Length: 65
Image (cartoon, rainbow, N blue to C red; front, side, top):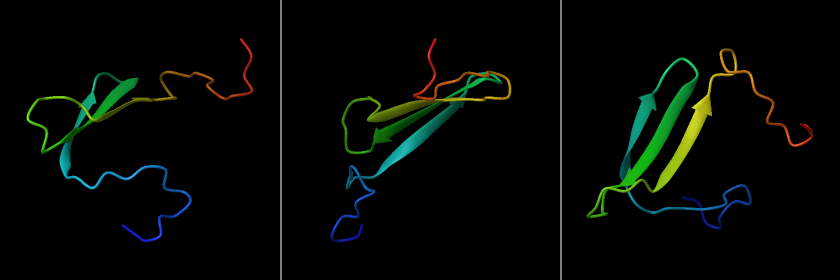
């Protein structure tokens, strides 16, 4: 970690953990990060990833449905 905090860094977590990356199918993957010091099983951060080749979606902010 750098001091002072760079402008591009929005949040910092000074803890260790592990990641579980689940490839659900050819279109969806789930990322879950767990803190090691938590005494219970909870994801501290999650994100879904989509394969745009097999799951084409337009999620640009200028897209109007």
